[in-house]
Amino acid sequence: MRPYQELYESGELKERAEKAAALLRSCSLCPRNCRADRTKGPSGACRSSDALKISSILPHFGEEPPFTGVKGAGAVFFSDCNLKCVYCQNHEISWEGWGRFHAPEELADAMLDLQKQGCHNIDLVSPTHVVPQLLKALDIAAGKGLSIPLIYNSGGYDSVPVLKLLEGVVDIYLPDMKYWDAETGEGFSGIADYPRHNQAAVKEMFRQVGPIQINKDGIAQKGLMVRHLILPNRFQETFYILKFIRDQLSREVAVSLMSQYHPGFKARDIEILNRPISRDEYDTVLEWFEELGLENGYRQDLSSPGFGLPSFRRGAESPFQWEESGNNEQGAVARGRGAGCGIIKQLTSPWPPFLRGNISEIPLWRGVSQKFPPGKGGSRGV
Ligand code: SF4
Image (tube, rainbow, N blue to C red):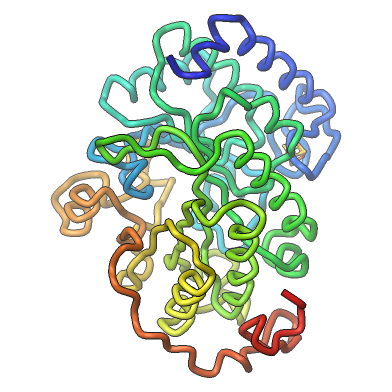
């Protein structure tokens, strides 16, 4: 029996949902701590009310292999977001709020339908601002027989007290670690304190679930995987994030090193973000991963820039063109390999040659220049 089923049986899941719902009257569901009364309508930085708005619910083949498997992750894409990232590939739902309102009972039935379709999990995408509503839906779904793992797939700007309400509820945490520098958090997501809260949140997630556990079929059942999207001209921050994972969590923590950055949305107008990452940047990051002694992770090919970019206006059922039908080549590859949004490979293949190039002179955000790699003349005292 899954822990969330036990919490349902004891009645505690319902109590947790009620405790979380109380936070909506003076919202502190995320570290922005807006104190908005969301029961009165859309408010706060996420512009959400206490209603549950969802963009898409579908078997999704764009997650890492242990989540996608062969039948897909059972993805629920929530509308709106507590982050406002200038390069967001899901900006149609995160910034513009595309989606349809669902009653908790509807979401519960949708989750059960994903389970019936064979999905390996329920993959809650950008759930931070709707924790109360999804707990209520989960309580209903657990009562009707939901039993597959629950993934909390967030941007990583989560509140520790709210995460404590999710202990024993969430099986798998899949948070981003986006930035190490406060200036970058402020510049690219409008939140200077992202790193501090993100690090505290990921530590709490790891305390609850530990390293990722995969069953004999290669499907994740429990644990933490950290996602990190490498940004052009900011890839040096990756070093500190990887070092944090090694030193503050564990070498065993799985890290998904994502190369799929695409200069879309507002990033087109920001000079240092207006290009994909380079081969040099990605290879350097892979080298750091190895040098730091991290043991578990996934990487993406650089060969398909822009591959997997969704359009949530195309229709709630098919935001990912390659998932709409298995006819195109990328869709076939994605389905067959349990990948997507670029092709993700387990880090067991030989490392590419180290192409450090001239990285020590790459200018950083706001023109600050810094010696890299850290620890080899760097100035931050790692
Ligand atoms: S969930 Fe929304 S309203 Fe609540 S604190 Fe975060 S951004 Fe503000």
